[in-house]
Length: 231
Ligand code: SAM
Image 1 (cartoon, rainbow, N blue to C red):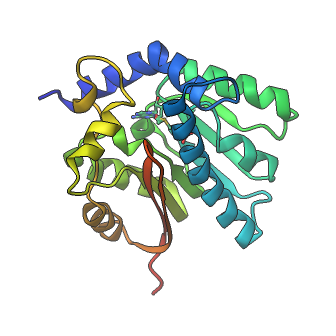
Image 2 (image 1 turned 90 degrees about the horizontal axis):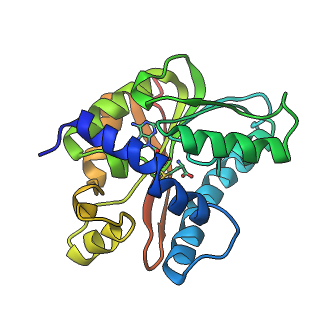
């Protein structure tokens, strides 16, 4: 079985090459095929749920947010537009370059997120809110605990995570395999047991406050907002 380092190298290389082409198209507004459109719309719902939580709380202005594994900035850019101070990063240089380009089109430099090419497990600093959307799919279950612990160490008040939930339907795994074209596609997409993710959150002092689930034909994502356990 590939080690986590191998997984990360594969993920970085993928998102710097054919994965970049595929995902920057899916996370864009140009023409895509039916499967890609379904994934685009499903992913947008996950992003919209997070933005809705910020709107409900009405406190985005000036809030420090870390968007770990930011992709092309699908969440970072609207959050910065709402006035949050967003530190965004991704393991793929190409994704970060594209995110930065998209941000420049829409925001003045002082309002734009900062973008860095960095493995999320090497991030430091402290942020009001840490968000990590649809990145756990690249982590095997036995590495997810360490990843959640590291993100927890960066978050003062809130941690927001989304992941493809593990359920009994093997067809789901096969469908998620469709996201990753190539011989090893099914082994590179990891589903996560919600119970295990919740256990990891609890072990790091969090309790789940709000949750959402998005399911379309080819996109499945459980979204959890965890806040500090009150004394
Ligand atoms: N979070 C973004 C969003 O929802 O629009 C992107 C989601 S995309 C499915 C997954 C992203 O996670 C890719 O851009 C990939 O490069 C990034 N990624 C995977 N493993 C990572 C890691 N260890 N550290 C930082 N980024 C990572």
